[in-house]
Image 1 (cartoon, rainbow, N blue to C red):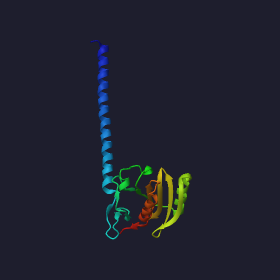
Image 2 (tube, rainbow, N blue to C red):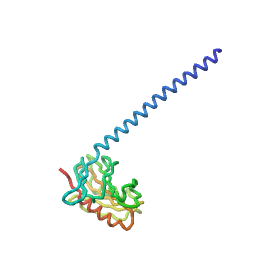
Image 3 (cartoon, one colour):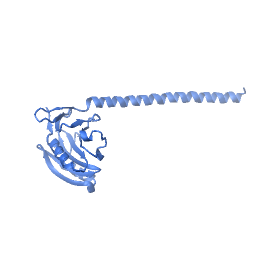
Image 4 (cartoon, rainbow, N blue to C red):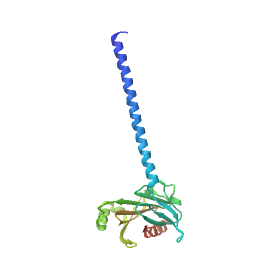
Length: 206
């Protein structure tokens, strides 16, 4: 074997070794990333949401959140969705339970409670102005000011793939957004009444 052949073989062998080392490093990075993702999911799934139980006084399903401490009363055919996270708590009734895309419900109702914590929560008037500037007015059906208990709130309803009604208010340094998704069909008014009752059941827990 001449010198040129030996040199070529040495280069090929070196490239194989380098490629193997790079492959191992990339594989380790991917495994580490998967591990971190799984750990994140475990943390969220174990600490993020509260509990549901039957409320003896009303016969409804009572959801009690961990932090911040609040509760809601829901019809007892609703279930807490397992994918709920710290800042997005989701419920489905039985007709909607197998539909993951809340914006395109064909039946049933989805309820989502989203929370935004801030040291500098702005005035309600500013939040309303921001909402009205951001939404597409052609999908807006109605909007109004109201009280949730004695808390000033704002409600707006849109028809965007499905019928969506959202109530926004500020409490204890959090902006609460309680949204209901439902199809625009004969059951809409029934679900709207349920939604109004759920929103008005909001209560702070000790």
